[in-house]
Image 1 (cartoon, one colour):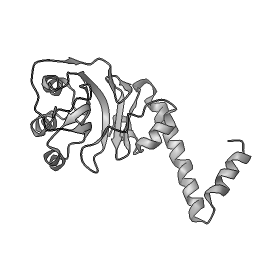
Image 2: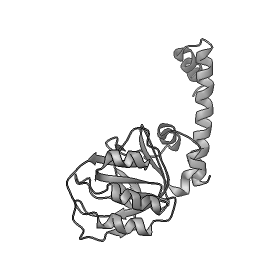
Image 3: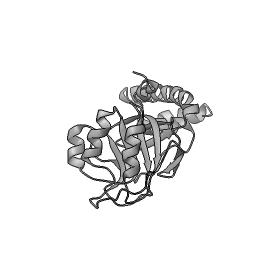
Image 4: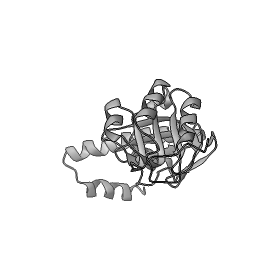
Length: 204
């Protein structure tokens, strides 16, 4: 399965809290279609607002299984659509995270390709700037480097530093187990105040 076992099935909220780091992207970056889930190592590209040539080059350079992470300055243009989606799927790319606009939402959903973007926009783009691939980019207030683990779901997106991802995933496992125990006790009749009073008494 790899990709850290698809982030071990954890939600972005759990991963963000378990990390203890500023890994959560701006909540303005959302999934293009309901139910999309993004998970994979980042392949970064820095482009220009209103220009999507960099994305065409990134599709050709990104390794299979990677998530394209594109900085186009939050620009409200349709930098990505159905044609690039088909090309990316053919190359085995796992999804797109872009700080900017995209279009063809219905077609992208029908293809099942996960896209997380700052906005939807229908303005067309030029093709002048080849962009820069593989260098760090700033997306939604978080610096993302090629190889970082990107996870997106209905709640948002996190980018986990590759050097720290195993530690974060281990902490997320522990946090999820603890929350499952809490929910078990709640279903047995205890209240949330009972449980949090226990934590305070234990000095946690």
